[in-house]
Image (cartoon, rainbow, N blue to C red; front, top):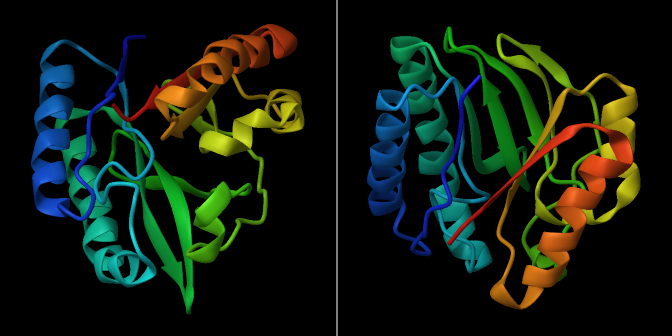
Length: 198
């Protein structure tokens, strides 16, 4: 299996530019033979946003997931696509696992919110259940979720073969990133893929 981790820079609030940049990388990865393609946390919207901007960008962010479903179906690839989700009045940092037939197999909501995220988003229900895909059994976390050892442990015990972690880790947190990702893999004897925005 060939995996593409797209570690792209996103411009906060510039959803169309971010989408075009992300799609350019996705198509490049497809040309290089990727079977599984993963984008970073909040790649389409950017990260440093106000509540008002998040509300404004929620619908176009979710619409991009539908475009990614079509890409997955057209090219026969599995995509892991973070986006802004909204259920009733609650906003979530989310990630969709899209099978190569275009079907969304799972949507996961970030469970542990970092710092100011708590003022905009709601935490997910910590549904740590891996999903079977055509490329293996995938577990998903988002950024700060992986700083708690139990999250990866639970996913592994439930059969995850690879744990995918889209993130927005700052340069100041680089040492934690470099330590924690390998530690989660070694502790659980499982593949861990962290995908960070640039």
